[in-house]
Length: 211
Image 1: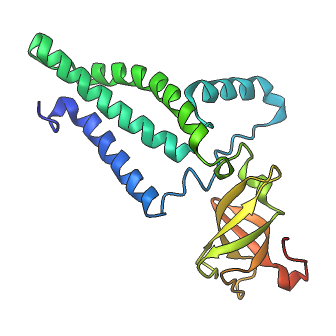
Image 2: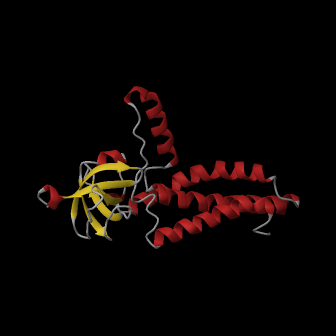
Image 3: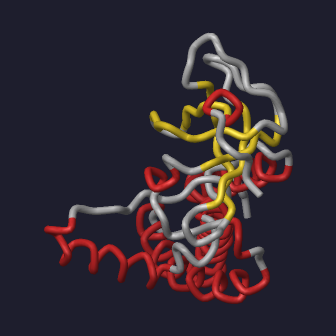
């Protein structure tokens, strides 16, 4: 079976994306899942939508592990199941299925299998790497620069604990354009723009460091 044939192309692309994400995770650049959260805070007036969204994400296993890890598992299974479906079709009928049909069948099988596999995976992963809180809830909390030097336009990696005591890793720039924050310094997160937080060194605010 030709892995790169047209009828296998969606699954080949999914496998390639999975490998790329896995490499990024291994080298420490893949912070999309372990260092950030899905910001699902909805307006309190739409409780029905919130409940529906929560039910769907729970059913799919999203939230049990960091989303980045969930996505890697999903892409791998989607690729493996899709290629297996096409291989089985070729062995039984002498020809693969239409690509769109194989994609639909693979997607339908991948979602429940992914949800099943991430449950035991969640039990063996460190539980302080993810949380159900939104990113905005981290504003006003104290963080510590762990890697690099933060300057205007050059964020550095920092760790911060949410209200539950869970650890998150975020990218931080100085709130003041002229400031620099060095590795090991502690900051107060004062605002957020996208995935970047802006902080003020505790020494500038004359605040006691985190115990």
